[in-house]
Length: 415
Image 1 (cartoon, rainbow, N blue to C red):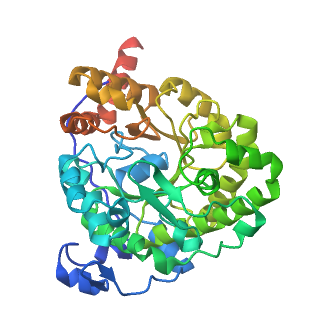
Image 2: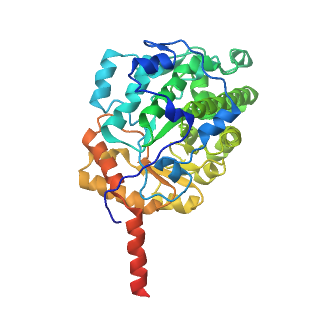
Image 3: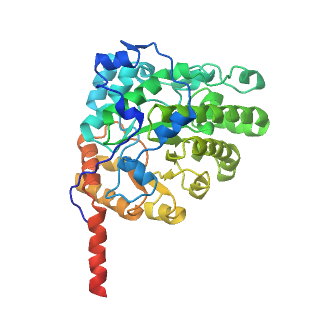
């Protein structure tokens, strides 16, 4: 695989590229209705024409082109959890703001943290710093995040009575997400894709039913058999709220959306068909109608037994974890869908030549069309920042045009 440095120019032509000044500028904060860390303006109501305009662009970032399987000169690259505790600048900020919910629900902090890896490494995707549980209070589910236990749902839903607390999505409670995406879209400009994300209904339901993080999933799996009507009602409500949340993110400036069915891999395949896939199908169908130009990425941790099933959801890109061989994944999925991944996050602790070799192997196995280079899971705490920088440097050194020209010349010699 040939290397040569290159620069890719990309961008957007939507109204979100004309937001004005830097996010740190007080004039922009006034323009968007900010007052210090508070937000006074109400979120914009969803508008079909506006959404379609936000979904389409004459000049798209490299990542969006790859997600649509368009021709690109190198693989775009970003990392799951690329903003976080492995970065010294993040740890320093977290000391000043120890509450995760404060960091992920305050516009200026969201923007600052989201841009930390952008300023350090220039990835091809800038993902908003948030959490898959962030929208829960906006439809009636309160939660806390404790240092030791992690997410804690105050009132788990396990009965018809519990379902009464649910209500339609209140976007006013998520204004910080929309405002942050608008600012990120301005800051990144034409140089990278702004990424939004959501949790899939099954994954969100596991937290709501179990009451927080679990290693066994026994309560929700029991509900599949003992209270299926309650679980179906919960999942149906979640699918509608999540779909509306996706549209809101796109309207606010997200180029691309990743759906995390993080715990979908904890289901046997036939159970995933019953309890996760139908609700992802519903979300994808709605988004494809309202935002047909917005690529959707589906990631499941432990997805080796689900790849073919994931493809039938209609998403544009399947994220592979590192336990799936990239060449085998490409063979199983075919070339009519994009793929993302899947360097083992632990490889970033290895000598840099070994990391280079692994990136080259993954990219060569994935092919030159429809591949977004990423890790097979999130960046691990303690990952050396120089390894992350090297990851992106190697990604930017690929030159697919050169490789194809060399192959063409070799064919001529053989002929």
